Image (cartoon, rainbow, N blue to C red; front, side):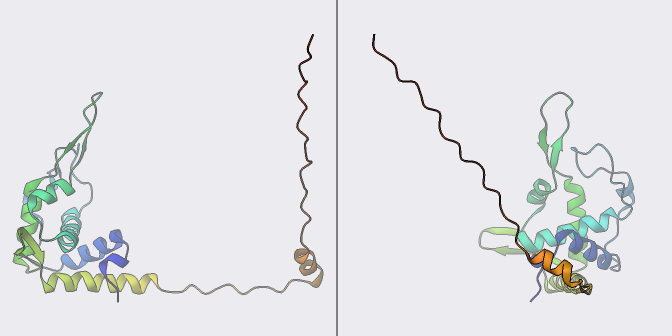
Length: 186
C-alpha cells in the first residue's frame, strides 16, 4: 500500500498543489503577490503559484502532525533571520498566511477542527486524505517505471579470458623495526 510516507515529499507537494488549483475555495488573496512569508525572509516568494504550494505543504503537515494549530505551524514554517554581523536568530513564519490557508482548506472540507485527547487543532478529513493518497499513488506509478536494460554485447574470446584472470596482488615489503642502541655502562 502506498502512503504519503513512502514517496518523495517535494513531488507529493507539487502533485497536491496541482489538484488544489482545481478547487474554487482555495485561491490566493489579492495581497498574496506582495507579502513575505515571514519576518525572516527578505523578499516575497518569486514563484507564481506559491499559495497553492504552501497550501499543499500545510495539508501534508496537518495530516502528519494533526491535530495542529496555527502557532505550531508558524514554528514549522519559520527560519533564521539574517541580522548582519550579529548572530542569526529564529523567527516564526507568517500567522496570517497560515490562518487563511487553514480557513480555505476548512471551507473546501479538506481539514476540520478536532480534538485528540488534550490536543486541539486541525485534522485532515477523509476528502483531504484521499487527495494525498491519490497523489501518492500517481507519484509511485511514475517512479516505478522500469527502464529497459541495455543488452550486453558479446566479447571476443581473447578479451573474456583476459578479464577472467585474477591480478596478482603485490605484497608490501616487510620492514624490520630498527634496533635501538643499548646504553653502555662506563
